[in-house]
Structures are given as structure tokens and as C-alpha cells.
Length: 242
Image (tube, rainbow, N blue to C red):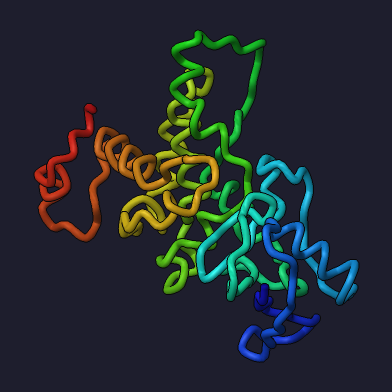
């Protein structure tokens, strides 16, 4: 089986990258194939991995322009393997996650001042269970087309985390987060759903962003592109009280 891997060396610009073909045994996961190549064919190949169980998210990369976890993806003939998009390439399939992670500080998605032991009911815990499953792999960030044209867009990674905290019964800073996601945030998303498709945990950032829009309307905000002050958003059939 032949696959192609995009190779980058230090200080090499993406447009000057090279594609290298490797022959690997059939029936392997992508991570198994990468380890086979590194130990049997090319020790210079560089990539990240951790748990090998689709839990840690460290082996996220792209195959045929779609985000996957290498430890869970079963290779097919002719697959083209590239690093995650929208982030600086360190070497080969290893990227710098700093840009994606910095967006979390912009939406203030953390417990500000926990003053006591915080206990949740089962119902409250269930309300944020899916968003809490995020493994920080940044696949959604990589897949977002808005970031292609606006690198300052918060992206689905941060916006899903923002929604998780606004929905957390232990957190009382909802307005602060809603304020933080207005600029380059909820209204800039095109709702294309690429982030939802890319998420290996089944999280739906598109829906989370829609719910953040609803919370924004409840806080008095509206889509700045609508001169009507938000009526167009509500007339589109989305109920902010849902």
C-alpha cells in the first residue's frame, strides 16, 4: 500500500513542502504506519502521539484534507497525510498548538474564583457533559474555513468551551463570557458545520455557537450585520429560549 506524507523541515515555508511516498503494509492504522515508517524506513519522520486510544488527541492530523486521529484512522491506498491546518508547522506532522489554545484566554473560559467546594446535581452535570468531553485536539480549529480569511476569529474550539462555561451551574460569570465572544466570535461563524464533522468526540460546535447566539440575544446583543437589531436572526426560526 502506498501513502503520501507531507514533509516540512525547520524554517521551510508550507509552499515549499515536499510530498514523499511510502509503502506500508495493509491493515494498519495511520499511527501504526507512521511508527513503521519511522522504525523501518525513515527515522527522520516526526509526529506526535500519546495514548493510542483516541483519548488524548495528540495525534490529530489530516488525511485527504480531513481531520483524523492517527491512532483510530484505518489507512487506505493513496491516502495523503498532512499536518493540521491554521497552525504553525514545527516539523513534518507536528504543529504548534499555542495559537489555538490562546483563544481560550480570550473567552475567559475558566472558573475565576472558586471560593468553596462546588457540587453539581446529575442534571447540571449532564448539561455540560458533551462539551466537557473535548480532548483539545484542535481538529475543529484546523477545519474552520473562517480562520482561512480571518486569523483573529475565535474559532469553534474556544466557542464550544465558552458555551460549556455559560451552561455550568457552578459558574456565575456568564455575562463576562458572552461579552467576550461578541468580537470575532459568535456572529462571524458561517455555521458551515465543518467543525462538527471534524470533532472525534461527537461534539457539535455549530450548535454550541447557535446557543451562544441565543444567550447573546438574551443579554441584549444582536448580529451586527443586521440593521434590524436582531429581528432577522429570530425570524430565521431559532428560538433563543429553546
